[in-house]
Image 1 (spheres, rainbow, N blue to C red):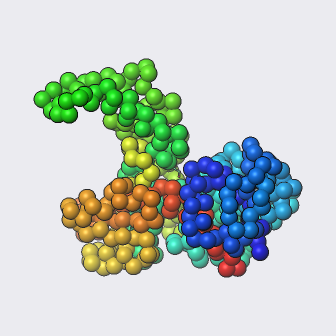
Image 2: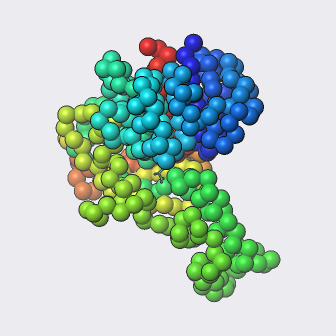
Length: 370
Ligand code: HSE
């Protein structure tokens, strides 16, 4: 049985991963040690099959080295500190990671097996050992459009994103709630219908957003009653790092010979854990819309093709529908007035499941198959 070491199981992505692994009875395949950065030597609180009853030391290279597989959702700082030390110490095991630190390294593979199992298997044959989860927005877009990528139908894509608070982390989600409460506590009066005074109410809302007591420590700005069209750091070419990742990571995932340009604007909106994206897809040739629908539908079992009607869209093509589920709704699929090779689409996906935890969990199964 392979020895699996898990780090970062208490964080948000880690918790989602644990839930998924327990639901799928994954632990029966491994001898698992849970490592901790703060409660070393204490009792392991996760009661799963074949697990070490004592928490290991997440900074102890000798302990980590005994593992066949390290799976971490601890974050980039941990990876940056521990991964080089562990490899220098001679660790030959697999390193599976949710953080972005190693993603673009030459000897690391970005894992999204419904799109790139062939790339993953080739890397395993070549004895590569670092397998890294992709950026959430990129993974969700690629699952949605898997059929079009597979058929090499795409010339380029623009993606305009609507990204949830969870992309920032647990504290950001909590801050969004507090921002909403800060405002609504003060403006939603005991009279439920304020329509007649709504312009005065709106002014109050605007003023509250710049109140010194308004909670903004994590986002640095109001997200509630607002949106933030910048995610991650600034690059010199005017893109945000999040926007850069779309093209860089998608092409690395596919390892295709011809690069597909992907660019757009990434926007934080006040949803909790689902990222949405409005896509303009330039097709290489005019493909009939029913064929496009089949390509999208048939690529993988998680895509939920949503017919382009108002009622189906409002029911299924929303964060409300996709939250907490592996389902990837894809809809608003139609040819645009720009011409027959311009396709419009909209997609939604749970940022913590397919966007983070699920590709890592599936990589464990790929290793079991070896
Ligand atoms: N960078 C993403 C976001 C989340 O901020 O929404 C992690 O992939």
